[in-house]
Image (cartoon, rainbow, N blue to C red; front, side):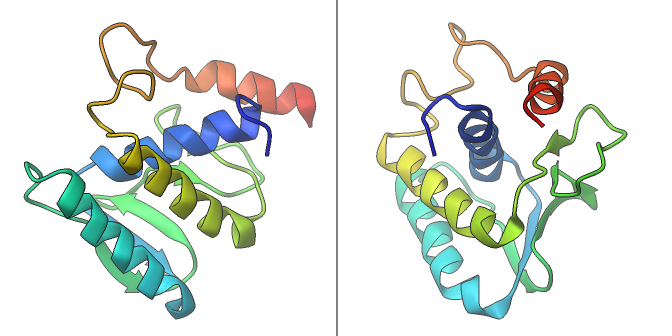
Length: 137
């Protein structure tokens, strides 16, 4: 995957959300649980100020915040502009998100410069992201 491609940028944003959002429920097939549990342990090591961590459940891959889906893997565009649209192959997406989350943690996220949510960086623009997806699709 090419850095700064539409897919890369969307996965980076999804990973940022996984690392900073509270009240997350991560549903994924049981075979992925061990690696994602390790990610959650790494989150605790990398972010000692964080007191609440994602809960794991068995099921089809999805991530929710208070019953609100933080991103959609559906090929149909989500209605809410607050939902990050990831119309990519979910089989590979689970591993790519895990890798991207780990990379961000190793870089020092959320305190690292250049990887998101700092004053000098732009906020995620979901409308522009969806336009890029439609133009490449």
